[in-house]
Image 1 (tube, rainbow, N blue to C red):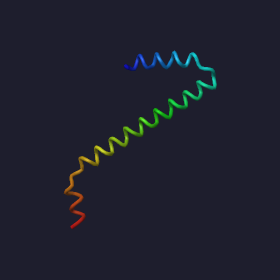
Image 2: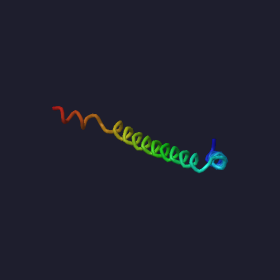
Image 3: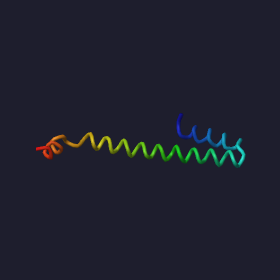
Image 4: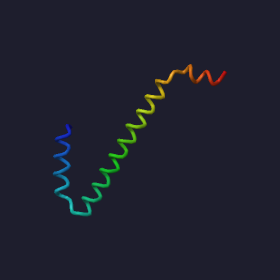
Length: 62
């Protein structure tokens, strides 16, 4: 699903919700966005760690 379709679907759904339901839905969307951001940061850290040469670690062991 492309971004434009996703936004349209969210707008259509939100139009059917009452204020309390909409607030809960937006809280969930905020939590999902925070988890996605955290996942991206962890992925970047993992990639950085995997590109670190092992020789620099082994120097500390001698």
